[in-house]
Image 1: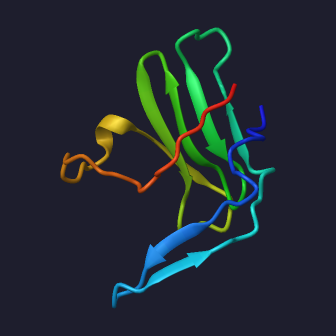
Image 2: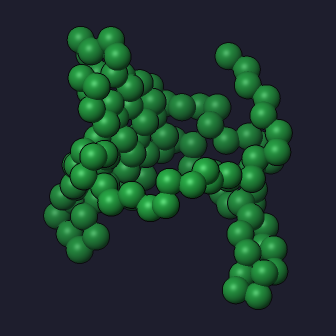
Length: 106
């Protein structure tokens, strides 16, 4: 199903330039792109997919995690699907995204 509450009305993105200048923008949110759900007949499954500019995301099926993404040089709309275990891992050190407020409503 469509993930309607993924972005807040005041959503912003912040990144830093090569000289450490903070750059914050308020990009237009394409909220029709994002979906979440599960795989039928698999109670432990989950899926999180973006459908804009090709399919991107991941899903869990029968205890395995898979990723899907468009092939970079393909004009045919082809996608790659691969298992999490086949992804080369970076440093496993804890990463922090910078979120400072967490209010969850169901």
